Image 1 (cartoon, rainbow, N blue to C red):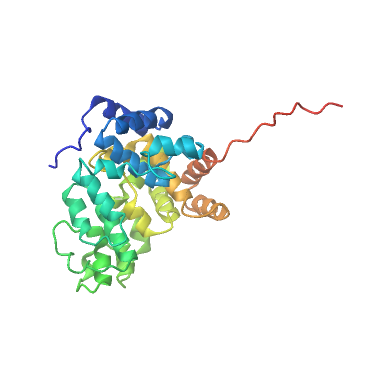
Image 2: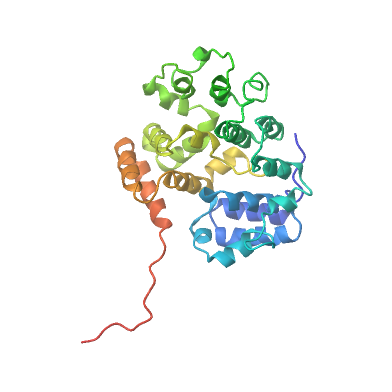
Length: 306
């Protein structure tokens, strides 16, 4: 078990995390900002990850004026502030891994470093980023015990001699490895796959009567399998994956991530497709989209009179 991130066990940090998971951004984020300025590396790391990930940002943060947002979420420096991750890396090797991930030359092997730190989601993210940059290296890693099993297809695409016939019939990896995918069994895969935990918890909580079709609607609405693979707790060392998935913030973030998979014009089709698969999920998605609409500006002029 890796050591806690410095500051992670402070009562004030734990309270701020509880508030953030309860979707109380206006209370939680100023607390985290104060802790970050006091040198709490855990708060610095979490703020940096929230700042980097639009899906983790609720309506309150998204609608803050830019200057206030920069002051709240970043450390001083430059025109737009600097990520707190730089400061956190002075105390936490884990923060240093994220700085390496955000660099243009991050290698695929970084995934194993994240996995060793208990960051399964970040390990998947590191491999997907490496694949997008055509960095290679996955084939040489696939036999390592810490290699994410849900991303064997990347090693296959990198030239590894992998027989994917042992994959579950509904595992989306099959399609990406040139194998037949039993589309009617994808819901079975979603019901057990660790990568789909957030989708399952959302549907069990919000759409229990139609949980199976809800998971299909949510996964399809994400628009790409890579999005499903990389969605979840910003840092599993700070916030356990199951805890995040069951939280109000985690479930709001899932809806936000789905909404961000297309532009404003595409959301009409997104909602129509969701409605066709699971009306319950579509209702929650529509509500989430509405939450982020900018509030109407009330005219300062008095109403016209006859």
